[in-house]
Image 1 (cartoon, rainbow, N blue to C red):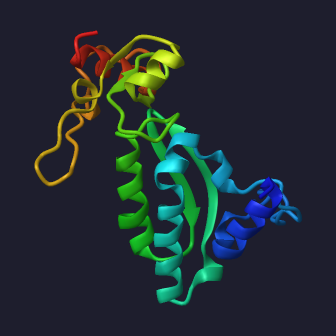
Image 2 (tube, helix red, strand yellow):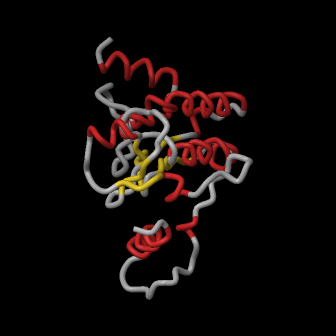
Length: 185
């Protein structure tokens, strides 16, 4: 199946994947891409359609398919970011956050369980992909993200605020600096 046919099928199943042009408010007329194409390939393979299935089921159950729109999908600080509007509160408070947390532990390239996190551009990698795509120093993902608390929640030692370091620069720079100090890098 070619890309346009695949995208057409996806948009028919999940209409919220259709690109909207933010400035004009108009939708794309072709099927060259969907907003799901912006999701890193490993995450898309591991859970991309599962996330869409949960969202569409919630939208259908609440009769609000037309009210939901995905604005942007991206990776930031080694985690999925799914920006959307409309729909139900459950989508925004339960469904999407579940996959955002899940993404921290899934290789961004192949979709297998991640064991490492890159140092410069924070991203989760499995051992095989880290060797195949050497981009910077890696640290153990458990050391970086912490371990589970027994209920599936990850403790994130690097998200403690305020940081102990002197504030000099943007929050994100401090955020990453403190993260690396906490894992001894």
